[in-house]
Length: 214
Image (cartoon, rainbow, N blue to C red; front, side, top):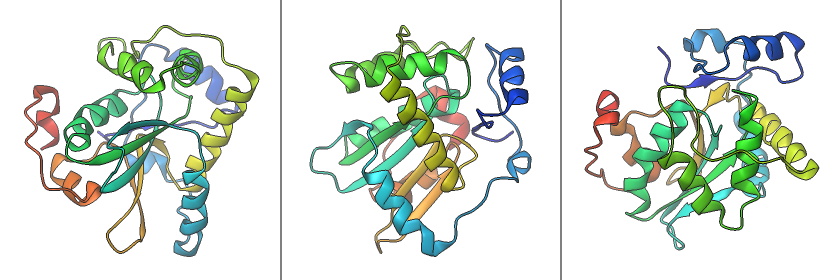
């Protein structure tokens, strides 16, 4: 099974019905099911990355980072939660992660994104969502709040930017490698891939929930 939660076009009535039908479940599928996602041409990536750098996000990790990693996430996404757990080890080693919210998995995804992004301390709110994550129901742990119109528009813009990167589900990882080339990874990375993604030495990760990703 794919290590990402597939996204659906929020403007599609069929997608809305489907999301309602599976509320409380993770939406996961084989990567082949996301074959409709367009992969951007290499020449498009620098402009897309420049747009990503201007996007409002939750910032975690080093204030003087050795590398910056962007992650598109849904507050209810199981694989985003696991990615967050894995990256905590690398944040302590000098990584900065900028978490870019999208909302598509459940009706509560928008209101939980609002609880995070409209908080006075976004990083603390994000951590509350992840430390309180409910794996049995695939729900982020933060209490939902009503989103502002500005945030609702931003979530839609983030979703469209994610789509332009060719990212068909969350988590979606975007970074620049040591040669300045834009890289994109869809889904939960293997722990063995994290050194190349983060530009940092391999960190000892002993979390039992991450054992299947070694």
